[in-house]
Length: 147
Image 1 (cartoon, rainbow, N blue to C red):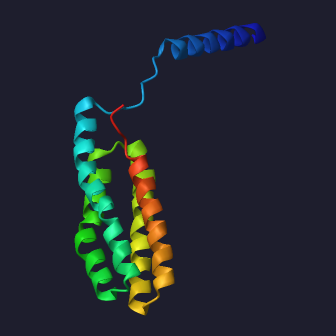
Image 2 (cartoon, helix red, strand yellow; image 1 turned 180 degrees about the horizontal axis):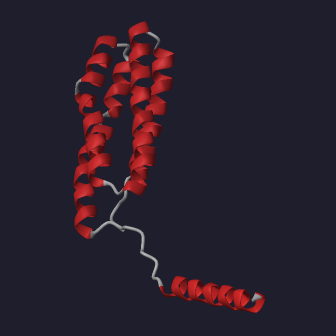
Image 3 (cartoon, rainbow, N blue to C red; image 1 turned 180 degrees about the vertical axis):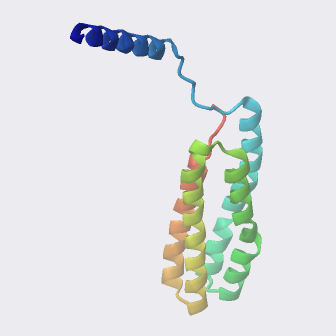
């Protein structure tokens, strides 16, 4: 009786090993050329906003606090919707979280600039501006690009 159980156990183990070796792993999802092209086109709109960040620095340097507020909520006001569309609609699930986290950091930095501007704190506003630019660049570096 003991030998029959041992033989059955060995046969089952061999069967499981055989079936596992026959299965093919599914490759991770990747971007098609068309998807990458669409991401690149949409990212160009976000890069255009990044290119305008120097205007914000100039306003901070000149201590034009009302214009700083207007710039953050005006031209940069579309940034949140653009980054959300990019992450939610164009990116694969594996890429969404880090890109979205980087975007959130940019928004926090912009909010901190806004607070510093409301307080008239040039030093803090410039410090937060530098963080915002670095985080913006991090965000753009995480967006998939055409190889």
